[in-house]
Length: 475
Image 1 (cartoon, helix red, strand yellow):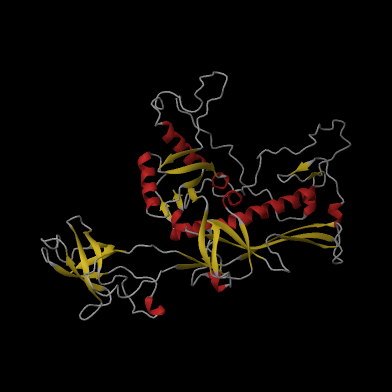
Image 2 (cartoon, helix red, strand yellow; image 1 turned 30 degrees about the vertical axis):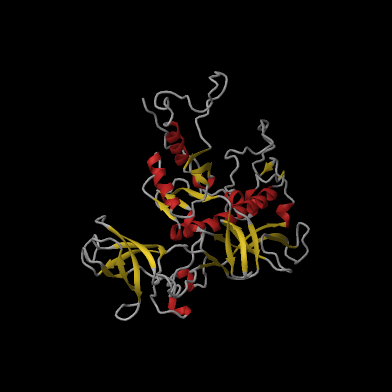
């Protein structure tokens, strides 16, 4: 009989930190007049294990200094020329035709001295024309471009086939260039093509946090040893609170780079002079590949993903960062490929040793490309993205390796990781991770206020290069 997990009691997601006077955080339940004193454990029990969720950027990214409020880079466009929204003015069986290109042409060529809407085809080039509805295809040679009665987005073509055009007039079609042909003793190709590099930009944001404790509270000693994930330990409660503030700030350094969005025109944030920054999720959803409507959990689903990657950068190695359910779905998919997967468990450890644990999971697979699988704690944590009903992200696909880009600030080509963080730094100021102590307690002597204040600051932005090679898997 199928069982279920009771909804009560559940896991706690109420905030563990409160904005209250520090003295109330100390244990004061002492009653020495009671003859039955309690037995106490000397160390605080870590019931939630490692509570930090930062790890993603350390695994896939790097941190690189920057000196500017604006970070810009250019990425290569396609090498070959193809238009997918064209129409022919010629009728079926016509030996020649006028082709109109209706694709959106970017960038605006008028800004670089060319006629707005100029198409990148030239006289003498040979093309393939294929009807988008599958009704026929032809090959031909371009005989005139944007001249005489032809508009800037039109060219004339002469078909090679004796039967002429194989599809009806005004049928939407696709055109791509495959070569050229010239007669003997003629002049060379007229006109040249310039690459259309796409320029992207981002900007850093400033993150801050603060922890403070009064001098009196610093003198109070607890009776339970406290410890945190970064190794801070002791019987002074303010040490735990200070350490957890740092851990929380460390997590926010990562999650802000993942979740941040730029302030849209007309938004309240922009009106309040906050501009935001393009985060990882925002960039991949805007310029990358999006899978929605459930997890890809069959080989045919992943074939669709592979087919999309073929049309992008075709990066050989990729890493999948997944929530737990998506990870299990992939394990089940791979197990089903085994002939005993449906009725047994022969995959995993094949030694048939009863003393060995059966490994029911997979760390990666190859299907056209190499895919390595890793759990992403951030997507599982119930205090962060875990258990969201709307806008849930089940996983991301990140290409491995580096990408060559033209750094607009450096003025030269540079190799950069696909995903990396830029932080503000100059010869006199390093804002990657600043922390300083002020006040008049705890060794600080900067003011006459009887407290110690620890400040944290960072100024950073995330750069997602070649976002067309990334995938985001949404619910």
